[in-house]
Length: 172
Image (cartoon, rainbow, N blue to C red):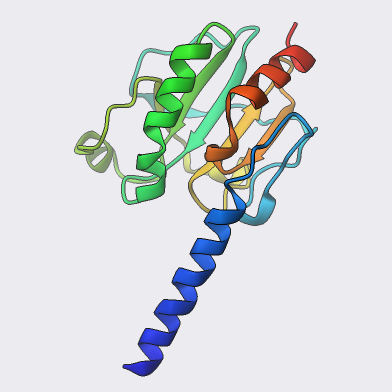
């Protein structure tokens, strides 16, 4: 019992440290947190392979693409939807925000009864997580209109300043 409590405390302490580290205000200085996988900044992003769109199919032409990798059992992922919804409402003319679900069954996704996802949503092929090197969730990747990765890390770091800087530096 004591060992179980000690392990629990270590896990909670580590999670708190990781969460605290992710609360920094990222800017366009090409921030990347590859501790949970993802792609390196400046690399060409692979194609987005949707098995099924749970929303209308977005037009990606000339826009930034923001992939929000999540799962139905990931509480931090779900609590981040309000943040991504807000960014989507503000910047939908410059960026396409896409909720990219895990490899859960379609039944699990359709039965999801969480907060609304106001941005685009897809179920992708299982190979997509491998292609984007996603090791853990939540994870967000920002891709510029030329297909180059400009951010890879925790979605809480994607904020107004960062996006505006990226739009100015890498937009058309």
